[in-house]
Image (cartoon, rainbow, N blue to C red; front, side):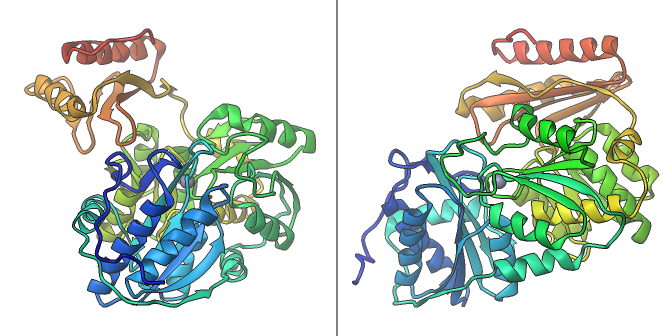
Length: 465
Ligand SMILES: [Zn+2]
C-alpha cells in the first residue's frame, strides 16, 4: 500500500503550462504523472495547513484512471479526498466552496481532442497557476513530498449544484431553448436544469461520451454549432446554448442563428449588473471588441481590459472586486450573487432570466451593439523561445508613435482612428496571434497591413490573410 513517497518524478516539460497541466494520455501524460501531481499538490495543501481536497473528472475515456491515480497521490500526502466523481469543471469549483474544502483538482481535457487530458486546480478558493504549477514540478523533481495516509469518501454535489444554479433564475416569459452538451460533462446537469426550468427545452447530446461521436464540444469553433443552429430553426426556439467539454465555456446563438460571442454576452449581462451596481468594474480580455469596453462605459461601469486566461481573469476580479468578467473564448465569470468562477451553466441560467424578464428577442439584445468588422484570429508560427522576444521588438518599434495608443497588458493592442489590432504570444501554442477590428472595410485593410508589417519586421513568415 505504501507508495514510494521519497522517490522523485520528472514530468514531461510540455505539460506544466501557464493556467493548467495538460498532456496527451499515453504520450506526455501517464497515470504515474497524475499520482505525482496529486502527491505534490497535496504537499502544498498540507504545507498551508489544509487537509481536504475535492476531486472531479470530466467524461473522457482516460479520466477515471487519471482521477484514481491523482486521488492516490493526494492520499499519500496525508490529504483526505472528497471524490465528486464525474461532473463539469464549474461543479468541482462549486464543490470546493460548498464542502469548504482546502482545494480542488478537476481532471479534464477541456475542449481538446479526445486523447488529451489534464488538471485544473484551486488552492483554497483561488486559482492555482503560473509559478504554483512550476512548483509542482520542483516538488516532484526533488521528491520532497509530504507523507501520510489520507482517506477518501464519495462527495456527490450535482443535486446541490443544480439547486444553486436554479436559485438565481427569475421566472419570466416562457422561453423555448435548445441546449447542446456535445456529449461533454455537462449532460446530467443540463438535463436536470432543463427539467426544472420553466419553458420548452430540447437537450442535444446529453449522454457523456469521451469519444465525442456527434461533434467536438468547442463552441468557439462556429462549425461545432451547426447542429444547434439547425435545431433552433426547426424548433422555432428563442435561443440555443452550447458548452465546451467541461462546461466552463459557453456558446450562444440567437433565434436567427447568429453566434453571440463572449464579449457580446458580457455586454448583455452588463446591462443588468451595472444597473444594480453603478460604477462597478467589468473585466474583459484583450481580445474583446472595443464595442464592449465602450458599452460598459456608456452603462456607467468602469471597463478594464486584462490578460487572456481564466486564472488571470479570476485573480484580477478578486483584486478589483469586479462583479462580472468575460473572455472572447466564452469563459464568463459572475461575482454578482455568485462565486466569481467561470461557470457556463450558471451563465446560461442568468441569460435565461435576463431574456425572460424582457419581451425582446435575443437578436435585439445582440443588435443593441454597433456592428464592426473583425478578422478572425490570425496565427503566425513562431518558435516558443522567440515568441515573447518578438512581441517586445514589435512594442519597441511602436515607441514614440503619436498616431496610435499602445496597451501592452498582454502583447500589444494598438488603437488608432481606424480601430485596433492586437498581436500577442499564445500561451498554449507556438504562434503569435493577431486580431483586427475596424469600422470600415478600408480601415480594416489598413490595420491588416500594419499587422503584416509588424510580423515581417520581426522576421516571421506572413501567410495570406
Ligand atoms: Zn473548458
